[in-house]
Length: 327
Image (tube, rainbow, N blue to C red; front, side, top):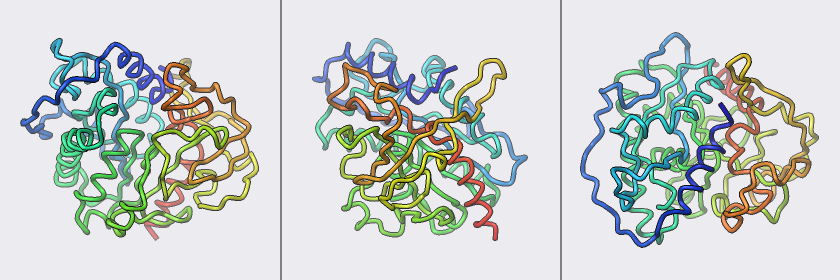
């Protein structure tokens, strides 16, 4: 197993190079029945006192039923669900202190992100509806009043932000400790339109929304995080622009094949915030660089690493926020 947020999307990017961008969206009318456990990677553990509701990033690489004009992962196909499993297994190990709930959903294939904004917004509503339906089923049947974290990366974070904006009741919000929407963005317009739903967590203990995106230098900010207005530095959980010493980075999450587990290993780097992106000047800009997609993810853009780059910081912060929530 590798750090699957990067390698899953790498496969999707490679697959994208074989696609045309001239297709028209296919209508999607069905609804996923989340009472069927076939549509959950994980939904049964209730032994811990808090939950993680996790939404995986773009991993789809299959042209479904030889119909490459379909914009969505067909999760009725076992092979399609299997595409997400490496990423979900990695994160279930990483967040093993909590009950782990992770639905499959009809995520957009990478090609969808090349479409005009109006088309993309329309397509995104299908994936967002699946995540809303899964979340509502989770709350009604699995949660049982426990505090929970929302966790996502990239497209997964995009869908969680839609859930925050339009899908959660006030009672559900009271149980949410934090929403870690890693590797995405919130615009100034969204923040004005949804001030309560998208309330940023401005320190290490607040309930609310946490977003972060990383680069090795200020020229590497890419399409995912450009224009973000709420991103924090995950080594301090604040919006301070001061340079933070390397010892504040508590290590990255990495799969250990010998132990079949995810471990936190050293990854020393200074950090500072620039336009709500966390700059890590001591890391190798080639770390997760794909030359063919430099226009979207320039050299030094660490989007593919963000979900595991601060593993130690995220785990410690989850414990801190949960303690504060309980008190």
